[in-house]
Image 1 (tube, helix red, strand yellow):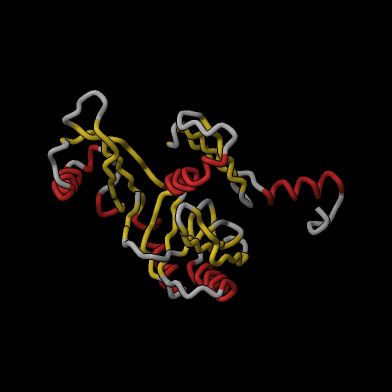
Image 2 (tube, helix red, strand yellow; image 1 turned 45 degrees about the vertical axis):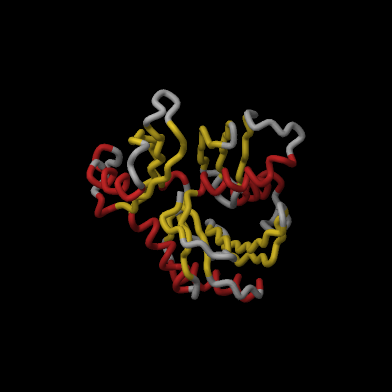
Length: 242
């Protein structure tokens, strides 16, 4: 699910978290991927609060630092929005409709699917597959987020000299990453249920995937920072020692 979807041979993945900006560039050779560039630039406290950007200038400067560290010359980037800031819904539509016709119908009926005015959100959709109960219908995944969530990420990339080619949903980006890694699991079974824990500086996200699709996502306000502080408190250590 992507609010922008301009295809380019090379894209930078930009991860904006509460503690740092991370940059990753991959290239593909056959069925394998190679890391072309990678960098991490720390963020000052409160630049990102509860997955919301609070200081675009500070984050843009951190991205510039990461770009310089990595040495990359690629200027098209993708970024994701946390699942807690995105509303998703699966609807059924006629398989006979073109993509333009689907978009027109969704826009007309949008108030049935999202609790906000269209002026307040960015809305996108993606056709999934033929509906199991009715082969004349298709399942369509809708994703909507408050306009500022998308626009701020586009703005911060542009301030750093990048072009936002893709604005994705974090949970869906995680699904795509898992699809590349699942062949390395001990039991490579497409129907298996897998749990993925993403432990960040201040937030832990648990994703449950079944058949490669996220069926449950839960965010908890606890991460490496709180764990370090608890070790400090319990053992009387400095932050650096902990």
